[in-house]
Amino acid sequence: MIGTGDLDAIRQLVKVAAREELMARFAAVSADTKADGSLITAADLAMQHRLQRELAARWPEYALLGEEMAVDEQQRLLASPGRALWCLDPLDGTSNFAAGIPFFAVSLALIVDGVTQAAVVYDPARDECFSALHGQGAWLNDRRLSTPESPATLAECMAMVDLKRLPAMLVRSLAERPPYRSQRSFGSVALDWCWVACGRCQVYLHGGQKLWDYAAGQLVLAESGAVGGLLDDYRGEWLSGLSLSPRIAMAATDEQLLAQWRDWVAAGLAG
Image 1 (tube, rainbow, N blue to C red):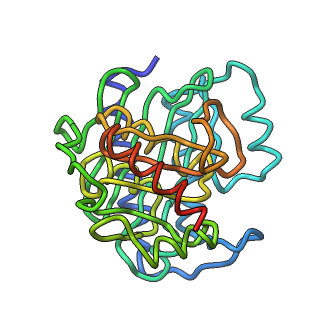
Image 2 (spheres, one colour):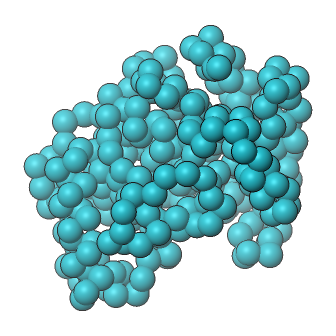
Image 3 (cartoon, rainbow, N blue to C red):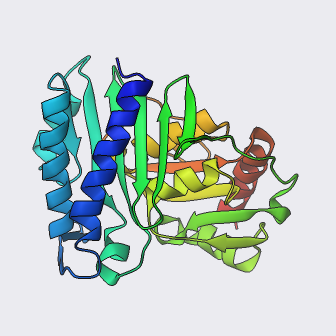
């Protein structure tokens, strides 16, 4: 099982690869469009290939599921019962990266028996490395990460909301009567989770995340003391288990705010 010494090695491996494969290509690479309409660059592929090779050399017992793999290969890996595997988004925020916007990250999680045991989310533009171990805490670089005290009400909060994937009625409600102080959307899901974890924003909503988007960031959030999870319906129960299907992500810096946020979202869907 991965321990703190292994986590240090993972951090270093990811950081060096990101500097050499991503930052060396930043703002100097063209993008192609994938079948689902999202972008891909040579940096995505180079980063995935490098980490797959280096992780296998250090931990040969773990397979790797990467965003840039074929869907049938992803499904095969996920269907193997009891298997431990890495889950990698080699470049989360490709649109930002290709446009020269310095907000993107590498997201890597180790999943064992359906539970994320270790996570690293590295932002090479700011040299910020978020990491976590299941049941042992979260860190920002070398500092223990603990979510700061939250505002008492939604009206005092900074929100991160990705409007693109939300139902039209909810978008209209948010536009006409926003319940929060201010709202942002930065374009890197893995960093979204981490920024809530460290209190840069206090409530979060995203309408469709894939496994490699949330696997690492969700553990950082949980181990920091913030709260949230995944849904398949805005009024539904929290989900567990692994799936390649998109899921709704909702989070807040404490339970009281999350309850207020969930109630408001449910009301907002009704118009």
